[in-house]
Length: 114
Length: 114
Image (cartoon, rainbow over all chains, first blue to last red):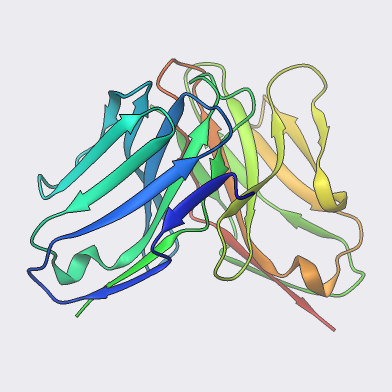
């Protein structure tokens, strides 16, 4: 059983399209995150949710909208995709926000905008 | 605010040699520290963490790290590397607040040569 699963693994789409990435965790964690890894492998937090409540919303364009229907799911919807959105997007989860156990990461979604 | 600097972007080393990957952090408050490993086309996996107590922390795959508060460092070491250790290594810091935010360093590519 995959602990944190993301779908799809690869996503190739044209500029201007709208796309969604889904994330599900079966660890019983109460906090979930989206991170963006750029072409230089730098990881930056985008959003976090705790029990469906938005906790962190970093400086991210309005075109990115997270949605958490329940504490086991955190989806990322991106409108009007741009070339600069090409990156690997990682979902992660943790038990609590004090990070005694760190994060568990999904395997990533590689988004390519052409 | 916290920050993390990984002092080497690439570390080439021969198989069975020892290795040290350097990490320095900056923070005005107490922190938790983590090392993660990312194998090609995979998500990040927790190697080890420092929360409190003993400054020498042992992790998976024979890795260990030493927390040095006076030098604000958390260097990762392995006495004898294998080809399979070739991967990207990330140091990360959390400020122990209730946000759950992890700040990552830029990553160090460990290249183990036969």
